[in-house]
Length: 450
Image (cartoon, rainbow, N blue to C red):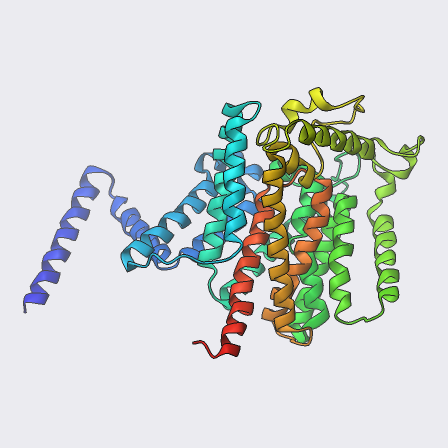
């Protein structure tokens, strides 16, 4: 009887509160309040779903298509919401455990060296502003992924969400080529805003394209048909950008897909050559306004020469500031000081993620960055060994395809200033998750550990 009275008292108090809200705010306010509480309860129980929402916003960039949405700051809302619900859920459950990984160490070191470079660089105020706006978001994303993606089913769903978002980008690029609206530099397709550079869009598509090829090679039936359609969209989208780095990334990722089925390196090399030649022809790279073969009368086009100038300038920055570099995200500010006879095409960017990292954060930051990449790459490679090439399941195709994605993006990053791009750290975090779920779990099973 006492319990029923308590429930009745709580219900009466809530009804009175909603009545006051309806009178003082708006008649529809109680409905909004109830819906908001319900959504909050759902997200509190499953912040993983909010993480997926954040990923979709990050890849599809709705505010850049519809500027009216920019006021909502959907990316920040989803990321901070997921982080807030994640910590709140832990507090309520009194669970303060943390996802452990050896890759956490280089991630912490990179954060320390980026922070020190920001404080001691050529423009501390600007570097700290970028640190807060960019690198802190990278840390949030890393923490959310390695802690919330905690089952094989979630890991598979997470990658499928990325592949779905990338397919949107691929369809957009293909449509632009077909409709004749791919006019960047004359004939290249890209999105808007952050992905307005065709090379950036190509690298983003490489986060899913090699994995789709892995699915084509290993799955069967309807699942294989799904991957075939996805591969056509994603690879076609990369070709629509006419990105040479993107094409090399496809070739690099394809090598490891082929290596499971073809033992002859000579045959694989021949197939890779055919992919590159066919890709150049299909994409029309030779007709590009900024780097086609008919623009290189002196033996090298402006696009390539601009990169060489920027790489040389980056090397001089490392020699001048070897420990912590010229300052986090300050390569452009120092470009004029260190470049010699730049071509007109030069855009004061490194066009190389590795040189950018070394020039801006010095050898300390570069060492931490490379350790992060190599250790996560090794973890993804170990997953391929645990699952094996003969597992036809969707889960295995996704998990084994991550290594191919990482190789492809790593190759593409050699031609892009992408060391502080969120997308690289998404792959790193996925590698942490996959190694824990498949390699660590398999080792524990072999030892008989529960």
